Length: 505
Image 1 (cartoon, rainbow, N blue to C red):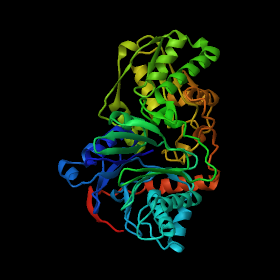
Image 2 (cartoon, rainbow, N blue to C red; image 1 turned 45 degrees about the vertical axis):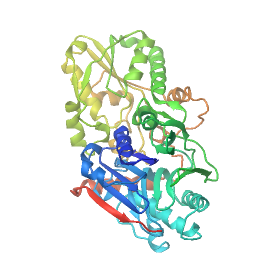
Image 3 (cartoon, rainbow, N blue to C red; image 1 turned 90 degrees about the vertical axis):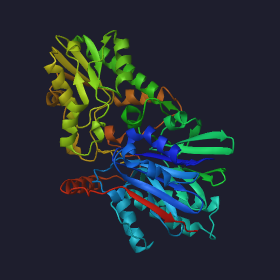
Image 4 (tube, one colour; image 1 turned 135 degrees about the vertical axis):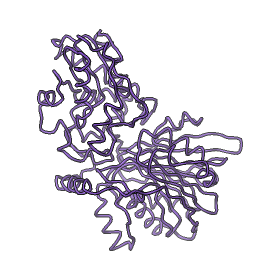
């Protein structure tokens, strides 16, 4: 889960990209970066931290040009962060190419070996995004028929990337002399949408992880990038597209709608807000069938993601809805905090309880999901300290029992509270009187209700079925082993990096 943006504008693009990154900041808090092109040179600034901390006025002034891409980073597969892994990444051979990536390659280790032995390219970081960049660069070199890249050659290179790479990837790249390229893996696991603006000087284009970027910046939403499709905005603002995969199948990650995306986004024809309303209805129906004996007095959401579900659930059950927690907006999302100790401490810093809403009541707390259980335990404890009679905990999502290897930081089975436990055992760990989970079929139906054309979803963290077909138990064990190793290491303390990158053509 990262935020990516690419744009071709009629005016300097640096402020547009900065504003776009602020709108997808929820997708990654580790690092941020922007690269622009003025036709002669690529200009880069990136570094660790939030967007507002990475970029200063002097940094923005050093990013001239009307084309650019941007990225905010969220660690995947438990990777430790070093300043060298802030994106976008750059290579200068055979063309000047910068790339930002949202997702995770499941065959990155194999590709690294191929890069070294066959493609004669060296990977300098632990990031699979650098692997993806070098695969793209190699395939562009194979497809090129001269010093200048034509759209046909670029699309042929992306088709080769699809044949070699496995896993989830939504990509924005900028190729010197060619323009801004965007493409999505053949399953469309991670989101990517396109927007257009007819400005005075000509057409402007933008591509981003979520439609909130397009809407908020005054662009018109055109459509989603299709799974397997590549889109090219050339330097003149012309739009080119091509289906580059042999058998694409749209299977978006369903966890995007549960938690990751902003509620005001529209992705793959699904309103995230409406999907969450439908989740609340389905969960209410289950409670009405199986848990009427709980005698719930009040429904309280865990802000902010679960509010739509909790409100609709309370309305459907005819139970009072109340805001019982106040959120400190200056603390980041605990699910994407890098360490368990930091994550646990930040729960109390992020949320405080309004005792009046809990005292002497049977409270149903609704959250979007229960992943590690760290937040849930603290929340239940806060409710009890505030005088709740009984505390029930409901999840808009099913039990998270399996690692996600497609770009969400859920790599270790032992970290997941639902792995190997019954609902009664989970309730005991959380300290709750009962735990209620959404059924997976109900979750699928809730999202599909907003777009009936969606037939498939990526749901591996709930059912263990990995849609790319290449994730084995050995692979999962290796990911967990690497995660444990990296836990023993301290991340490098790196400052922001600014650079002018000489253009090659």
